[in-house]
Length: 358
Image (cartoon, rainbow, N blue to C red):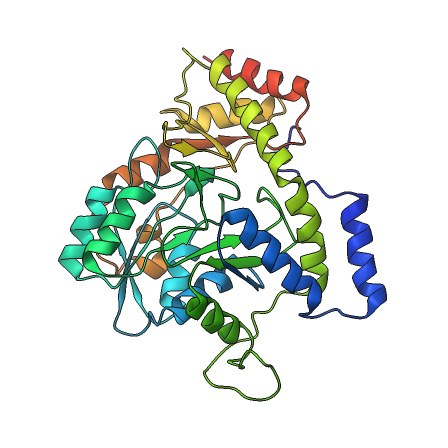
């Protein structure tokens, strides 16, 4: 079976983790500070704040921006539920705006309408599948309404909009380092920002509300959302490999898109102003179940991200929504293997199986 995901971890990651074990600095420490700095530099941001996972990074970002009880945040209903969960965990409520049918990211016009109608307090675009949202338009909306803009970049490590890396737009951005992401720390997350005040408050929130000097001075309510030194050590190695991983994903995607022209599926788009890093290679088909079963019978793994829009989840059915494009996408999307562990034969097989499906 060609797997839908295959985390790339080698001897260097193992050596780095073992060095942390042998050095005795297992929790938050110098290795984490180095990873924060290196990842922020990679994103073109001033500051990085490591977290235990992508959801806690989002929660910390909202806390740092003082988004909480009584506030509303416009976001996408077509995402992993963590995007909306982080809003509610911060004490705010999500407002769902629909997506662009070609990019699967927030439709700026639907977003502006939702911001106006609900007098929203923040915007959370999701860079789904590795493709950035329309950050130019969304930044204009946030600036016009004088509200924070937070990027959910959990799937977009190394992506760019208009030549600018994601992670450097708006007021903050949040990444996940879950095993299936373009780079991994096992579990882990990161807040990036160009605002010192946001970085300082996020770092405090992640560390029990402590002041920057540490010790036992707790100036605000906080959590233990810290990243371990071992995770950071793995992350630093993975970060050094990320550009190569992304180029391999992009090459695999280019081959599939070329070979699947004229087939029964609609392939992903990459607008001229964006750089896609293909966390997922997601096609659309009106015969998803049939194609999925056929691919798996031929040894090709698949995934559906996501079969249920967030507003149709039991925990969110109370949330007002108008998202027919998201609902249709949820019925038609199918993700194919695209990761750098694929061989040339694997990629050819994926294309061949799809083109042979009737």
